Length: 174
Image 1 (cartoon, one colour):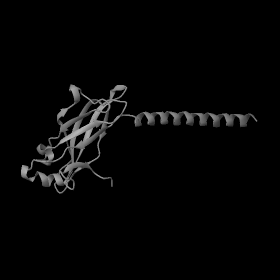
Image 2 (tube, one colour):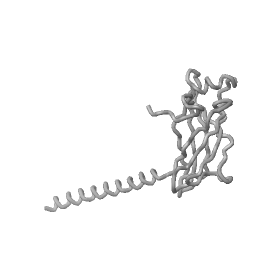
Image 3 (cartoon, one colour):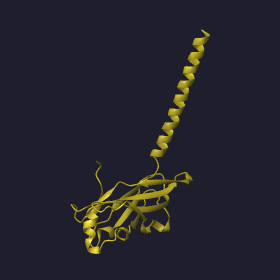
Image 4 (cartoon, one colour):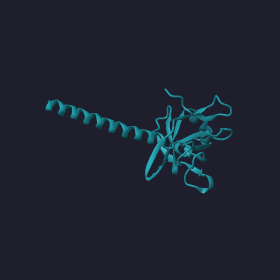
């Protein structure tokens, strides 16, 4: 009888420990799901190089800010070029009211100096752009715990010439 009670107590303690671990994991997952992530969009390519377009970053999170946001542009892939992925800081980042981040619902604009990475002549930009994939890397402070930084990579973008005027759009999955 004593042996059965000891075994039952061990099973009960193991179940309780699993329950507490599951509860903590659920709370952690829920908190991580609420973190803000930047959302990116491209301006229209109406004149000049497709690499000189202005991009927009937006904080769509209704509760938390993207504090101390730093944006990097990554030239991920240029087909048939042999180029390695290259990251460079975004130029001309314009936050609202001189801030260094985005409050909920706010957006900012920036440009990427991709042409300096490629080194091709200006008249060949459209051909290089049509073979390129780009993405953005945002680094910002974790809400409520400002001493921790989060790095978030966007989906990959390609130059969509089927749209008029053309623009960089996110690459469909797969």
